Length: 315
Image: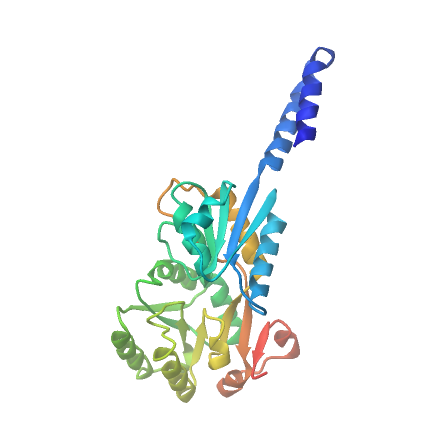
């Protein structure tokens, strides 16, 4: 930054010797350099042990590769004072990761550009990138892995309602029918799922489990759905990474480095004064695939197809 100032002062002293055209060319260039050097960003994320720390390392690497400026890092311990930590941040732009990062974001988002990531967020006033995968990518993966499926059924609660309209439009564009059912609690979700399994043409239908604490409840809903889907030879795919291991045909894994790049682009464009907030879906995912489930459903993927899977189960 001192070098830039020196150049500017030198130009001013020599101004009389420079022709008008040269000044017109060099001033915008210097302005661009100053702007680039002035850009600074703070990334806040939880302090975690291996192997989970690798997730945040990959995200921050993606941020650094995309952001044109200096990136500062603040790791948050398990216990901390959110207000005090927020006051330590000196940069104008902030990317907050995970639940601990969200606590910092809540302190700052009304006053400066802040985006959050590494969370299954929904539009709530704070901009960010949700761990919910872009429905377009999910439906492309479904077509590749289960090409006979023509209908997708998804149950949603207020937690995942924000993605349904987009999903419906993207399903229609791909020639798929999206059957979306609203529920408010686990009891109504169980009833709705039971009605699905009592229907017909289940071999051409797939159930999509979004990131939703009600319709993809881990203790009650998910084990029941996977058991009944197995019995009926029905496809289940999920937005949550761990569900493939439990028996879903496939589930979405975030590409952490691409997520970091997406967050860096978003922080450069977000207007913290505008409402509603901007919440994006993951623009790229990796796939976890359950090969035992695939064989049970009659799918046999060749070596080239398998090489494209990030994880396969059983190991």
